[in-house]
Amino acid sequence: MTRVELITVGDELLSGLVLNSNVARVADALGGIGLGLSVVCDVSDDIPEIVAALRTSCARADVVLCSGGLGPTSDDLTRDALATLAGVEMDRDAGLEEIIRARYAEWNVTVPDLALRQADVPRGAVPVPNSRGSAPGLRLSLGQTTIYALPGVPRELEAMLAEHIVPELAAGLDGPRPVTATVRVALSGESSIATALDAVDLSAVRVAYLALPGDVAVRLTGPAGAVAAAADAVAQRLGAAAYSRDGAGLPAVVHGLLRERKASLAVAESLTGGMVAAALTDPAGASVSFRGGAIVYATEAKAELGVDPELLAERGPVDADVALGMARCVRERLGATHGVATTGVAGPDPVGDYEVGTVFVAVDSAEGSRVIRRSLPPRRELVRTLTVVHALDLLRRHLLGLEPYELTG
Image (cartoon, rainbow, N blue to C red; front, side, top):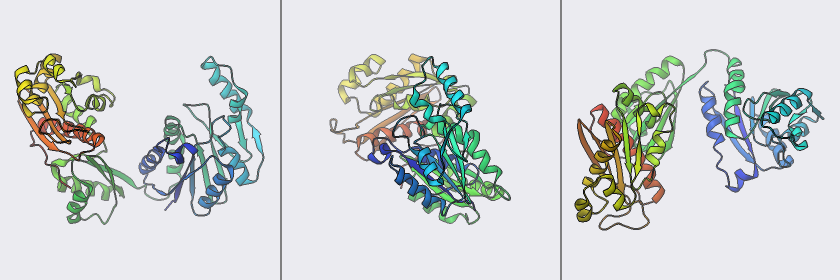
């Protein structure tokens, strides 16, 4: 089995100023060819620290990926660390210099002298093209280990992984290539899922649980036939809570269901403040089925949307019938076949008799309406995030003719 380790470079990662999301990007890209990360290490912008981390990884890994530190500034030290590790000089690559100059010309910007540092290559290393930036990557063989130095900018990293690194690694794998299937599960806790799957024979595959608020991905890796059988068994065991088998998220799944029915959607949001609309407009092609939305945070705004003012005066903005009214009004206003609405108490203080974490989510269509009440953990951001998942899952189940799911785990 090919052992792969990842070193991420940058003071900003260790200080907490920047979330190290590149770990997930690399792991996801490798998972597509059946590889996984054995070790992840964060190091500061310091040549001795980077060299030490590289030397340690090279002693035990077949492939070492190093992300960050390839830019033009004084704190970009990865290429210098590679030269130090290999004990070689740095050479200016004329071809890379030309590419960098051309890139800056496209931007109508004069090339700073500092930017040309990105054309410096440790002797013996091979540049890896960067289609989305000016800093090329580097490939260096050291003993039995191949080192890939990649930019830390996420969009550049993703492109280089897809265009160069993953294909090279895949070509070097011996025997049948492992495959991965990801079953996504909504609104069921990780422990509940694991307990339910105790009854399923998954001995022929490797299982990993990737948990986000309200959403768990069950990743299955192994031989193609075994993975397909395991995915079938997992989906069957988890029932309607398993909403996709190809790793697609809830927004994409909802859009797929709407398109199949030639249906459309509008949303009215109170406590989520546009988060549902943001989730729904993230997938490419969302405009086919998403009409738009209204953020009606104030009580008066709900009345302006069309919710009965007497109902609002009598019960307040946090109420099941208010949520239903919001869903119906936004659907009618925007000419959609379906409307979804959220209202509730995100905190920090209660609203009337409702404690923080109380939310109402509604869906409305010509076929009928549904509303659910949930009592969520009383932490503001978690309340808002989970409400988005509840809203999308309620709509999914409505479209499929299923009952709302009761949160467990």
